[in-house]
Image 1: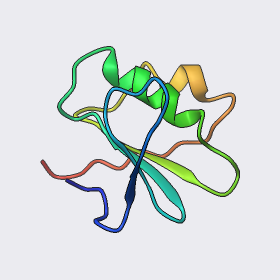
Image 2 (image 1 turned 60 degrees about the vertical axis):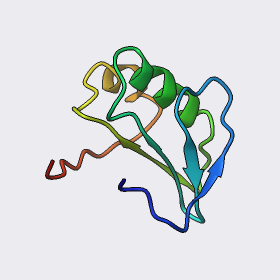
Image 3 (image 1 turned 90 degrees about the vertical axis):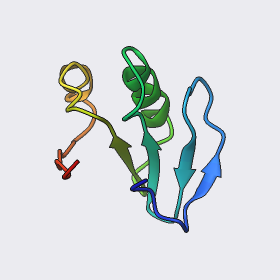
Length: 83
């Protein structure tokens, strides 16, 4: 798992996977889920955000359907990892 061991699990309303938090980030991993779970969890995670934290989504592919829905409200970056 690519979530830091120091991150603490938190409860997130409407999520279907565990979410974690540390000082600067929220994390969740939907790499083993199927549609529509990545989108459901991304929306739940985005509701957590404020100007002090970022959201890291680990997924099995780039969530192209998500970007048009959020680009007016959020900046995003994509980093492809090996495996």
